[in-house]
Length: 353
Image (tube, rainbow, N blue to C red; front, side):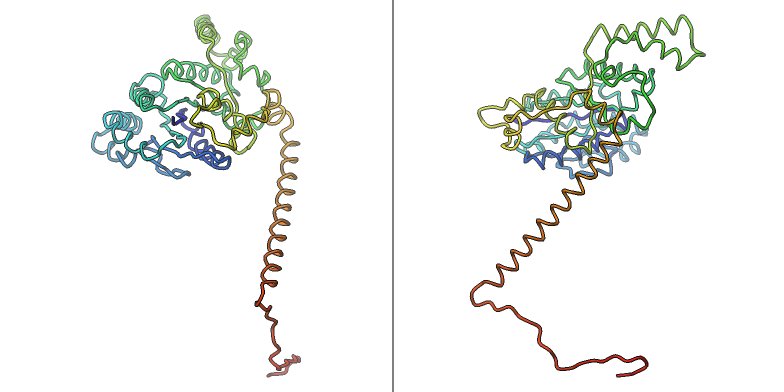
């Protein structure tokens, strides 16, 4: 039974970077994985594509033939993929049971109200894939109250539209300390706590728009989000091994990968890690690591990396010495020593030889 992540999110949220990082991380832990590019506008992927929608249709051709702009061209491309779903099914059949990462386009229409992407995902379910949606959002959204509320609305709408196991992720959490202090602790944003506390900050953000109508609108939006009570966020620093490990553990539980099957859905390395009770970072730990004491932890990590690099160099040197000793002790093999040529050169200033 194959598993897959459906990576969605607005432009700039880090979808391709995430797919590249997750592919490398899965490869490092011994899990067979691959990436399928479903974004026709993604012409420079940093990862190897096991399957690429651009081999079916290109954005330039659509914009030229159909006289569409970039956004309309991407929507048309996904409709074209939906109508030629056999092409995708045939390509996926060659991947076997590999864990698949689908890198999706960034147009929010595709995962808020347009039907093609959702229909493609449901078709994948019929093929036996265990799917989980990974909705990425740049953590910069936490720095502005209005942007945070808008992000909550987008996440909620995507969850209702996709109708699949869904994980919202705040990416680039390691950059959050660069934007200045937040009015609340990180857990307020990730757990979407009482949103009435953010109302005064909305008014302070745009004092010229303080009006009974805008206040009523903000209150209605906040109440809508709280009534559904669906949205929550995980955090991610894609270059941090611990952060990737914690997120993958959450994803594995949501998709069912962590529970495995009699056929052995899990790889050996990951089974051992789960069995030994791999610890996870609480949101308070994330705040301490990436916001409150980021510089101190960065310095600790730097020293750790230097020590690991030195240890690797020492290990390589030992292996090289052992190989040289082993070669010199092979029966019948004599070590060659340089012979003197009998010519001695004495250099003197101004002398020519």
